[in-house]
Length: 243
Image 1: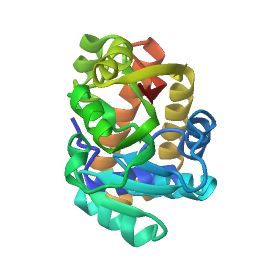
Image 2: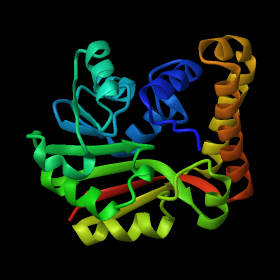
Image 3: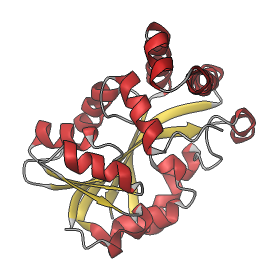
């Protein structure tokens, strides 16, 4: 499996996407999540798994909220702090937020980051440590409909969660699921668009890294699109409120 969560590979994907985004749909996906989560001006917002920082920057500027990003990759955090100076980005583990001296949060969101966390209990317990009463969460992420078939492709780690896990496991940590927006068709369209961008810019992208890296990345995302089209993989926005 090509490791896409390294700083170098995130920068490569950002070049394809046309911005420092690590998730499908880019600005379109951000607007979709904002239409449901609705951060208000001056509310405190946590970007859990902030990557290169463009999503936090967009959400902060669109809403007037105070956004803090946390990511395990210190190099990505350095890039975010250097590039998006209106907001704060902190290196850290989203399952150990209580160790980071964060402010209390009104809103928490995660864009395609929790799929890589095998312990959802730890994630949502950690969110509890930094959440204000009545806080709300939006998790925009992959859904595994057929874990065995998905694992056989090797395009994503085996920690991709099922719809049932995303509904039930957060409840053990006091988070009530308040809504689910199915994004299966949107994810397929976004990845088809992503692959089209790769093909349109093949020569430039292959020169940025190497033809071998280009082909490895393209195969990974082509496999993901195939899984989306076959119903092995999907996408959803899960909404939660602190009970």
